[in-house]
Length: 359
Image (cartoon, rainbow, N blue to C red; front, side, top):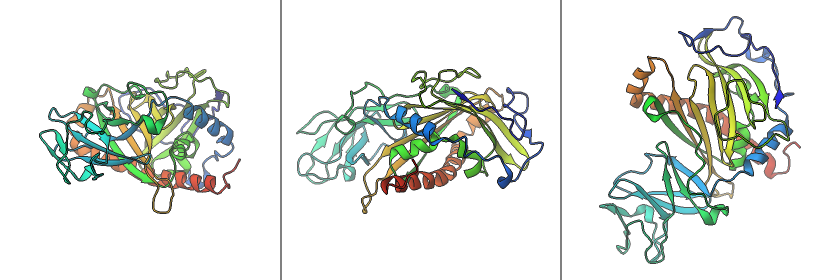
């Protein structure tokens, strides 16, 4: 790994969890006076990390949305990589999925009705219970408790995997999860490239991040191993990971310093693990799902971000109890960041599609 260890505005790595998670910045600097990071943000390093991510197997699995995105009483329609998909819940509450077009005369099954766990076409009454019928074939579905995935073998074209590549997460009993979805005019690789550039954080998101230092990054020829696990606190040798010390802004001079490790376990996913500081063990998963082009032929990608927060502090039990009120705040914070980051990703796609992307 390349090492880029420099003192930040608060004098180094985040401390281990103590009694109080907040710290006061001793000497905050204005946005324009922070240390430039453009020399460190090597296009070659980012491009090589992206290429390695794209070479990893996905098993043809695509994130549809949160585990709760499919209601109990009606179907949900999605366009995934141009494929029309319908999802609904069976009588036992589990999710069924398949082609979104009725095999009889092509009715849009997303507009049909669910009765006792059966999807009934609203054109002529053809009923689907989730098994093969009349030329209609189901798609494999996986609900991991946070996100809902569908496997599209004809679209993905890879060797199918029985389950998607899901990174390790905190115990659901002792964590709070929230899922935010936003859509941009770009391709999944543009979203992944954004997340594999941690150097932009304090410049592009000064309302959220300060004192950011990338303390480790993979070289262009990084070994492709350990990319799906949680990195150790200080031993990242040989890992295809970006290691960042950063402080989350709270108010005024108050910040929460952490160490975060970014890895890409599959082509359309980047995971941030908090390995030191407040919320150690928490993860933020960013999944990029291709949709269908817009009316002008530009690609569209859904960014589905899952924030799974955990803490060993006693007060976190109160947060878990208040999860219904906390989740909208978590989604709003993620949505604000992605309004900016989608502009980054969309700009990248525009430059790539017109042959003007640097390098």
